[in-house]
Structures are given as structure tokens and as C-alpha cells.
Length: 408
View 1 (tube, one colour):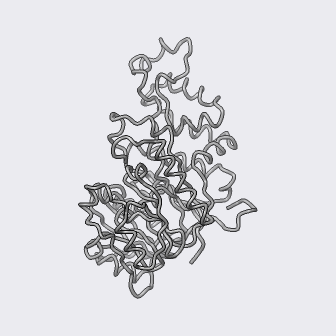
View 2 (view 1 turned 90 degrees about the horizontal axis):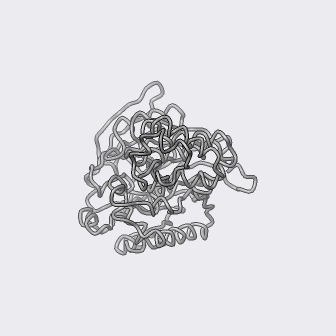
View 3 (view 1 turned 180 degrees about the vertical axis):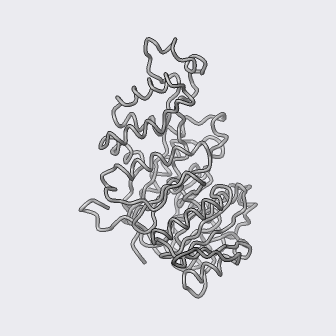
């Protein structure tokens, strides 16, 4: 990174190059504030046991550190960003305080209050939210804001962001650049504003350039797989639209960050939320997938031909990927689980592995069958507990945004 002590540079050209630095988010008060009322559009099944989720997350982070990975926590980076930059403070408040929802008078009062908070307190509000009971009390508050008078105290003036745990979705790195995505669910839209603040204003990211930023069509990082240098697969389904995939592809082509993008249709169902719930890379030439998916999954191929973009397909994904990666064959290791059964048993994250280097992955210990099949195929599996973290319908890959990987 920009630190003189780091022996690596920001960026990533693959999913399996040696992982050097990663951004995680340790779950906290943004999850404790979940209720049945505000859980309906979120990724968690039921209300998580936060203390246990924190223990599991700490274990995950320690496994990464034990393998030489620098772990940066989003909450710490956000606090440091606000301490470092007045512009970041103002932009973070502006993204969180909605005059359309609160009314101009209350929004102005709240923004003024937040501008005076110490950085750790403001970072907490931006992630964990603020209820009407927690709003500052002013002499005019009870008489000049109809919104405040009509809302019940426990309701949120600033909504919490319980899905911050899934740092892969709001940004990803390709080559030496970062991409800010556009999240589909209304409950998640503000997550990208925090990631954007960190990359734009934190001293560690000085000089980092953007690869992609779009508010036009949804693109989520869980749908983006860096198959090989210059080759990117983009899942198109529940969260990333065809328009989003095409916009991303054209942007990567324009910046010289990719020569081939595979647009991969995925079923719009809970078990197939993102492409990385269907398929992730575990080695330079190998992926892990559900049985039978390899035969049915297809891809449209977008190639940069200099002056234009050529789109061909559809054809089997494994064939299109191997050709684009310039390898003889893409090895497929199946999970041993049927996706429908996995969905019912909430074991739908066997595919969602995080590669630390070629042939070394992190996986939940409950994925017994999948982990054994990986080992039988020569993959080293580092197991972590995911009883509470897994209730969010995601595995180690979902919870991690690689900041730096070695080139293959």
C-alpha cells in the first residue's frame, strides 16, 4: 500500500494470487439493532447472535493474519478517514442524512449535530444508525419538526447498515484500481458511500485511481470474479443486471483493465444470490461449483476488439472461461450438495471460499462434504466456524474485499 513498510502494492488481477491485504468488517451494533421489522430486506436469516458472530469473525481474521495477510477493519478505516479529512466528514453526513425523509429543518439540525461529533462517534452513527430517541434535544425540536413529533422514538432517523459484513459487494479491486459498485437493495445503497469515503480520503489509499463507478445500473462485487489477468466473469441475476454487467465491461475495456468479460446468467433465487454463491476459484485452473451447475451454466462473451466491443454466445461457461483464460480445461470440483437441498439446510455457502494463494482456501467447517472433495482434489482447506456468520447467506469470500494480491 502507500505505507513504506508494506512490501506489496494495491491491486489484484486474479482470485487466487497470494493474498497480501484485505478489508473486513467486524459485526457490531449495526446487527444488534436488527428487529423483525427492519430485517425484511436484509441478507440475514433471523436475528444473529452478535457476540458469537464477533467471535467467529475474529477467528476468521486471525486465520488470515496467521498466513501473513494484513487485515484492515472497515470501522477502523472509517474512523481514521474522518479524523484525517473534513471533506470525508461532510460527505459521510450528507449521504446519511436525508432531507427527503426527515424534512429540511430536522435534517439541517441533525447534520449540524453530527459535524461536531468526535470521529469514533460519527463513524459509529454512520454504520450503526441513530434512532429518533437518540437525536439531539434542542429547545425548538419539539415544536419545529413535524417529522420528529410523529415518529416513534425507537424508529431510525438514520438506518443502520447490517450488511456491511459483506465487504466484497460494495467495492472490488481490478489491476491497480478500485471499483465502486451500485448495490441493488435499498437497505444497502449507503454502504458504497462509506467505502468511497475510505478510498478517496484515507492516507493509505492516496493515489489510488477508480476503475468503475456507476449509479445507473446495479453491479455487486459478489457477482465479479477475476478469473485470470484480463479475464473477468460477471454474474447477471438477482443483484447485477445485464445493463450493469455491460457498463462494467465497457469501463474495464476503456481503462485497459480487461480484454474479455464473461456475462454469466444465474438463477434469480435465494440459493443463487451472487455468482460467488454458485462458483468461486480455488486454484489457477480450478473452481468449486454445485453438481450439475457446470453443465447448465452458460456465458456471453464480451471482447474488446480495439475500436468496438464484440459480444458472442451463449455457450457453456466452463468452455468460454477456459478459452478466455488460455488454459486447456477449467477444472470443476463439485460441492457434493444439491443446491435446493443446500438452500433448505442453509448450507448454501460451500462454493463461497476465499483463496489465500493458489490451492489454499478458507471455508466454513460445516461444509464437511465440500471440504473433503476440495482436499481430495489437492486443495488445502483452512476451516473456520460459521454458525452465526453463515446466517447471512455468505461465506469467507463474501466477507472479504482483497486490497492486494500478488500477480500470478
